[in-house]
Image 1 (spheres, helix red, strand yellow):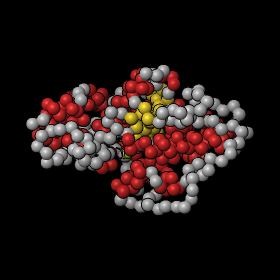
Image 2 (cartoon, protein in one colour; image 1 turned 60 degrees about the vertical axis):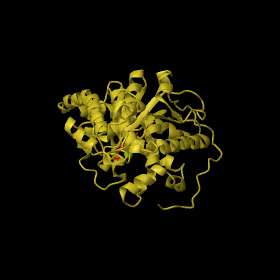
Image 3 (spheres, protein in one colour; image 1 turned 30 degrees about the vertical axis):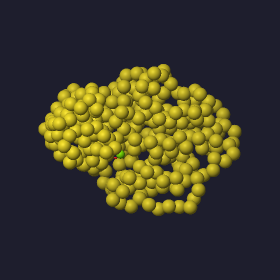
Image 4 (tube, helix red, strand yellow; image 1 turned 90 degrees about the vertical axis):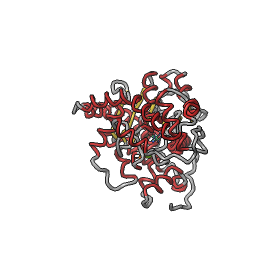
Length: 372
Ligand code: ATP
Ligand code: MG
């Protein structure tokens, strides 16, 4: 990975704060003491009006059980709690690690069907596609001026994604965490439900807010991350379950495909089943999936499975997943029969997100004294 001697842009002395800036949904004057990682319980104990969620998925393939347990279930819980939620389908981000985005409209449709089937309600949640909202991308430019190449170079998730891509580092891959900051801040997101891989990006977003604040005034709010009970679901090969790695258990699959994927999942040579995420990550991941799908704890499941071996564990996990996913899959099949449902959701989502992003961009440019 290339390195550079450029240092972090200095926070520098601040000009006078921009006059008449619009406040985000959280009205505290400074949010620097906001905890950076929250749990769902902590958020559900708060007034839903205190937070606004922004989260998203890349349309690189259909969503998988890592998404469901890692982030989708939480999005639905927040939505039910009354938290205003924005979900971006990040189509411009598909080419961070590949040349060919494939049939992007078709993949966007698959992802949105998965989101809706998992319980996102387009009446209350705004689902939009990146490329429909130009102001998001314009916001990236001032934000790029607030971070150094050296900082971007250190991002561990970008490093891992670079290695997995087997390609050279593109400037888009290097800078996509800044793009993500633009996604979050464009709609004034204050809470971002994520898998663990996204935490470095959240930290960068917070850094951007602090630097912007010091240079130009208090326009933006630092977001917190919301980590789930399954922040890193492993795939069938023992690495992070990812759409792009061919190691996923897809939400849209049928029972046979689910069984085949679980059967092929890597385990270890240990004869008994124990829950030991650090020492036995693959077996523990299967226990976690089985437990989440059946409303139990991984430890309780391990105790029950103790002498059964991997085959019995896999049979349990398959049955639990198939039963847990059945309503989602039925809903998805129903939604997929309507040729207009996704288009209508995204048209409405684009209008709502653009309204927010245009206003944020105007506030940012005013604070920077680029407009009067
Ligand atoms: P890709 O391989 O194309 O990057 P992905 O499977 O990593 O796809 P993303 O669209 O990049 O999926 O991620 C969407 C959201 O889902 C992010 O918040 C991410 O942290 C979360 N997520 C993705 N994979 C997992 C996983 N295996 N476990 C928990 N959360 C996950
Ligand atoms: Mg990813």
